[in-house]
Image (cartoon, rainbow, N blue to C red; front, side, top):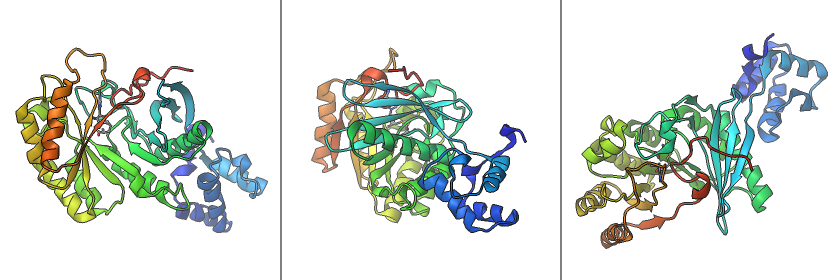
Length: 350
Ligand code: SAH
């Protein structure tokens, strides 16, 4: 049998594995053994499944391959952030970022190779979307980042943000399977409250997540609460108007009792006017929320520049006056293009 024809064993559920063995005149519990090797012990080689007989290992090898990611390159920032080029089984590459603070290590994980969307200010948008990551490629990034965090910072991962390459909600099915495994005690065992999924605002998927009663946190990249401007900055937003976005976020809050975070970059001469601030405040009234004013990371264009400090302060003051929690977030890993919106597969070797 040719390698490329074989199925990736990691795409099988525990039930599928159990059935495989009964269909092959063996006992179902072998499926549990294999599942443990794959998911608890994280091995990538059938030969290492030492509690299986030689003939069982040969049977598996005959039918399956074990696809997995490899850390290809890594690059360290002056502020301690580390960016990784992660090679997939078909040689495509995504990036994952490890962001340490004094007490935490956050992994920023990718969900697509490239991105389906066309945000004008984001470097990932310049690479064509090649494909969705499958669930185990998402899961593997988390495991790899955890290993790196233990290695470099002597502690496990404390948080995960889906703010790497891609739009997670366009790959929701795989994202959900991955997060289920990340949060299961027999998987990675992380609390869902330590996981944040960031979306550009695909309203119908926010409704779906609310219906699924997911337990992770939601961040929405808003950047403007004026429809016309938002559609210019994020052209796909035409299809997901602010009205629908607001409705979906309100529904999310009703169903999950969770508070959304709006990510918002303030650009000089683009959205730093008083009318922009008023529009944001009106938008914030639809549902309880927090606002993160994030720093713009240049992608080497000549259109977008970070707004002046006094305009950012004006946003902050106006939001605080309305009792809307607001933080001004500094970027990490800028010197190595590892900050938000800079991921475009330019990781250089150490
Ligand atoms: N597609 C998802 C997640 C990836 S982007 C989303 O849109 O939310 C993660 C965050 O980085 C988003 O808030 C995005 O708007 C922001 N971002 C994109 N380009 C940026 C840039 N050049 N500088 C700062 N933040 C940027």
